[in-house]
Amino acid sequence: MLTLQKVSLDLGPNTIVSGVDLQVAPGESVCLVGPSGCGKTSLLRLASGVLAATSGQVRNHFTTTAAVFQESRLLPWRRLLDNIALGLKARGVPRRDRLTQAKELADQVGLSDYDEHFPHELSGGMQQRVALARALAVGADFLLLDEPFSALDVGLRSEAQDLVERLVVDQGIATLMVTHDLTEALRLAHRIIVVSGSPGTVVFEHPVTTPYRERSHAWLYEEAGHLLRQPVVSESFLFHPDSEVA
Amino acid sequence: MGSLIRSGLGWGGSLTGVLLFVALWEWGSLSYGSFLLPGPRDALSAIVGFADNGELWTAVWATTWRAMTGFAIAALAGVSLGLIAGLSHTVGRALEPVSTVLLGIPPIAWIVLALLWFGSGSLAAIYTVVATTIPVAFAGAQIGARTLDQRLQEMGDVFRVPFAMRLWDFYLPHIVSYVFPALITALGVAWKVTVMAELFATEDGVGAGMAMARVSLDTAGAMAWILVVVVLLLVAEHGFLRPLQKKMEPWRQVKGPAMPG
Image 1 (cartoon, rainbow over the protein chains, first blue to last red):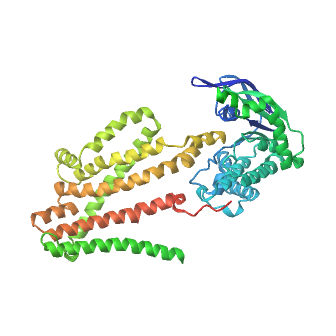
Image 2: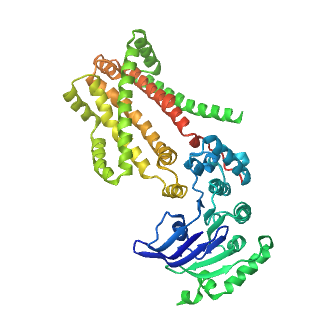
Image 3: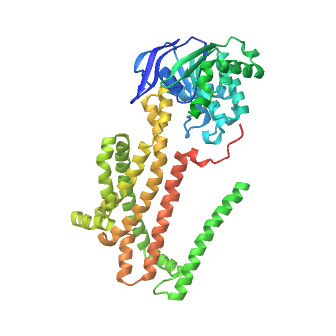
């Protein structure tokens, strides 16, 4: 269980987020959506513990937290399997064991033929799959995903979402995922939280109860349309003609 | 097969450059006369002459030994200081001006000082090499330590990577990629400075050979010694440092195109 209680964060003179209450239950998939610069990534950093809240409380009761970042952040000088096994090495797993586990994960993310490759020999989509495998390797029960597929084109993104659904959500791993794509959120989340404003606050919450197999493309777009008709959501997402003119 | 042809063409390309240079040299020698500019054949026969009377090998050994000792000391000290300076801003700020001053002092000035302090001999030459190459190694290591990727650090935080592993897996490979080019430059400087120091400070070595050639107006001999130094430098770089770099940085060697994923 992750709990953020009345969390605010100041960086220098700027207040990034203010008074945020947020919970992620075990096995729950929560998506944070909102315009860029509203503090979504900062919320992830608070959850991962690399940033400390200025006020309020952050409590992370999950045993193992791992993350997939916007860029793959692989070690350029290590081969694919060693990159996947990074977290295991940090936990002192012997080399042979960790490479065996890494090999299994490489198979699961569809990279079984690329064991000996260096990151720069892989495409962007493949690198993100390695990053996902690295996060899964440590046996995380809580995964932070920071716009992991924003750099991928539509087809690859859909493939990567399938992978997350299959290897993360279906396996009961709790996730907190940041995205600026409403359809991506609708596809993967049990609950969508809209963060907006400066400083960022939670402006809207929306539980997604439709089972995953019923979330077709048509449903995704229709549901995104529904959400955007909510004034508070459209206000944080859509272009404001009035303010532009004034 | 394809790669064989490609590497053959690569070698052919380099060979063309070398042959072109030798041809120009020969042409210059023919038009200015072999006293002002002895041709490649004169230089080669001078080298053979040095080899016959044993002068060549003692000189090569003396110069190599001095250059390598100076280079090793400078690399060790420069890289360690550079790492400290890159990781700590205070130390960096304190050492940077020192490094700039060292870089600004011409090697010839170091030789004069070394002669005054240590008298003539190997020590003066080695000292000069150390003083002139330390700033190069220092700068490489400092930039390497200063440009560590913050995003990788954050990733390391999230995955709870312990400090020792961070040194080995995060810092070292990054720093090595900056230190190696600096060391290759430093090695070149080390040879040149050794020869110069020997010209003034020692009785043996390639530099002393050149001093002898000067006294006896032996232009072919001087050319021969220049060739010897160039060959020594090439052997040190391509026979030792580059293979070492290849071994330590395999990830830089593969340049295959990204496979569609």
